[in-house]
Image (cartoon, rainbow, N blue to C red):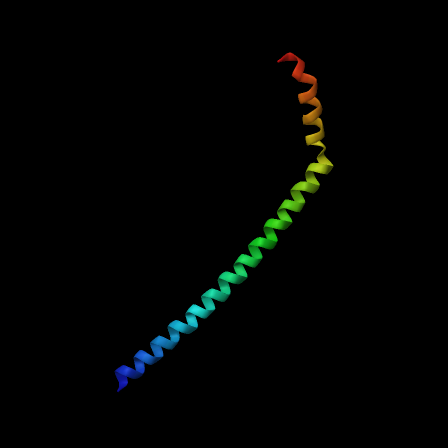
Length: 67
C-alpha cells in the first residue's frame, strides 16, 4: 500500500516538474528573443551613427580603379 502511494506521489512530482520546466523554457525563449531583437536594433543604430558603412562604400568605390 505504501509503495503504490509513493509511486503515485513520484508520478505527480514528475508531471509538476515537467510543467515547470516547459514554462521556464518558454519564458527563456521569449527573453532571448527580446534581447536578440534589442541587440539587432542597437547594432543598426550604431552603424547609422558611426557612418562606417557609408565610408566603406566610398572607399571601395574609390579603390576599385586599382583592381
